[in-house]
Length: 204
Image (tube, rainbow, N blue to C red; front, side, top):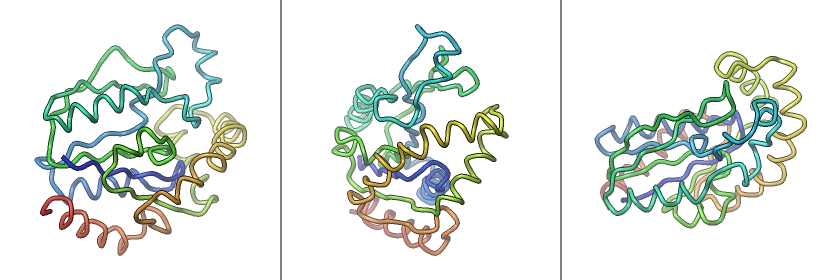
């Protein structure tokens, strides 16, 4: 099994690129994972404490569980992936069953920044986008999909998202095999990437 890592800043369009490639390769060939599913279990904290957690720092993720799951998939084993709920800022008690496939696509802001995770990847992609575009998409998504308010979204962006992007996400671009400019809207680059992945990953 080959593992493709797709990184990029919050709102850059990495999920769009990841899902587009997954659809191109077909569900029968692809196991799709999001790094967001692997936020640490914070059940011991109150809601107010969890709400203040920095979700853009490498320590926010249970990388050991993620690496264990990637190894299990690579060894042909089925895994139970955690389910994260942004409305409670924590994992739920539910899991989703995932079977091993020919390719695993892992997308997330820090999949190239965390060395132990990066070392698992056979093919590394970074999705780039202008900061103002990323901010607008972040605001739209957090309000419409994650139950946040405009004030809370902007506050989180300024206090954690932006500084963590500059400290960890942007520097991880140098580890990428391919950088896609203009984010998930770059249809030509995404199509070329789809064909490249299909040829070199599935048919190698």
